[in-house]
Length: 359
Image 1 (cartoon, rainbow, N blue to C red):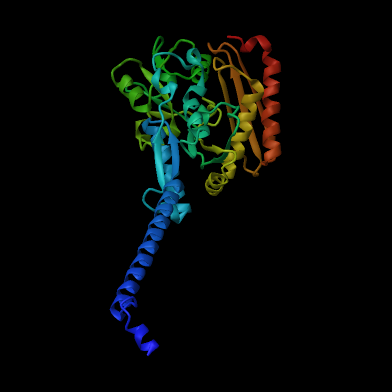
Image 2 (tube, rainbow, N blue to C red):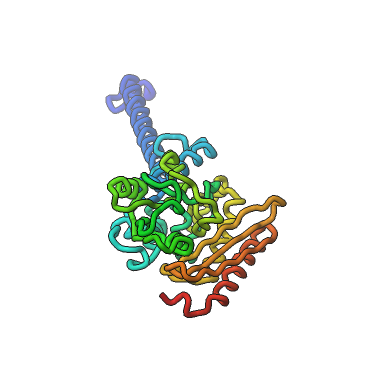
């Protein structure tokens, strides 16, 4: 009777109440589980956002073409980077892009095309930085490295004119537009009857000025014209014997932070070792000369027919009145290319004398 009395008590839950309570508990558990899933998905979304590789570049058409090339190579090498949002191109305005009416030598030199990009890299606003290697100073900012060079384009210079076929055809007093002291010195050394004036701006700007008759002719890197699909704009192409190229001309370099192992892995897959070694040699030559941005310097390292290194370099007076040249041959490896470039630079520095670099 006690048992019967207990089960019939008004304080005991009915079977319906038990069912409702079970459903409420299950619903609460499901709600807690859903909240957990939401937190997991949110965290995953954050990870995806963090995984976006940001590619820093200048905003000129040529710089962007090189950044897009880098992006496409990364996609081809890493399928996961083909996902939407995995790669982002970040345009960074540099001081060199903003000041176009003065020679580079008067406003601080080539580093003005890389400083703001270097700052963005060190501050973590970008993950890798795409540079034209001839714009990169020989000393990189602490905390950054340049582990990757893409396959080098044609190193030669293009002659462009609407009236004349070659530099040799230009009549006395003709004006050649060029922002490069290297080109100016080599032009005046062979053609002292010509005049060379400062001529800055991107490829399209210079071609427009030429079309407007501001100058009779100009010279541009053939590599840039090819990357812009504008090689047909070249009236003729100068051999490297007639116009030795700038150090690292035609080479694209990609920098990252020294401690960024993920970026280093990406760039390691893109690196073209023959190009990297040639650039190491040429930049060692430039560093040994320690010339200011007012010193015309040219250098070219290439594999010779036997697979070894062949290097040529020169330093010149701005007016072309003096030119010092050298050449080297050696093995095509890290240690030798750097040593040969350094020795070549030290030789020319000694021959020219310390006062030669004080313009």
